[in-house]
Length: 300
Image 1: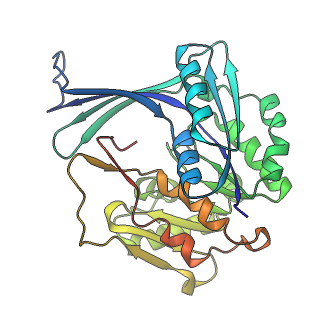
Image 2: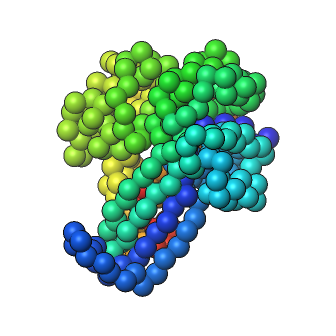
């Protein structure tokens, strides 16, 4: 049976302009391509989990506006098992303005979180049965932190496995880290969380050890094109690293979907019985490498 993954996270409407170069301050440039589409770390990861074979229940919040209507229509067509989409009357749907420039698809992004940061305690309470029925809860840090904390508390009370992708980075305390079964930062986020500058596998291992002392049970640190590493606490033999193949270089005008691996990872973990989720199978680590690629999209 397919695993059940509950994803609580953001929905943003992405407006993308593809240009030969970035405009200078005060300069107007004509884009040679433009697109509008669904985004947000939560919605992206929910979609990745679905495509990897999980049964997904997505929970998010949008504004009472045209972007919110777009969100509902898009999510209803995606194929999730279920959707819980709250509406905020005071703030608009989250949105991102994205410039993509040059052959290497370098990008500049401005994100307005809007309704994503207005999730209430009452709305979290309404989601408790959904979280309790899931094998895995996947969360990020693009919603208001008090709502994220309440959602994690609900999962812990139900015995649901909790994965935290700590992006975009917010300062979180050790008490929250101690409630996380699997933490999946990239090198920048691992540096911010641990105080150890992460530049390679050796420094990633030192950062993971600090994060274990702070309470995180299992840690995967993604290192971009270099690959990823995994470590469990109190067991030096549990450290593993996974390198990207150098035989297939990235194609021009593509991006590595930096948040897709944490999205597809729950589906891989769910292939085990629920009672054995506390330690990751080797196949779950392989889900991180290589990343999924899609054309003409910036790194979010």
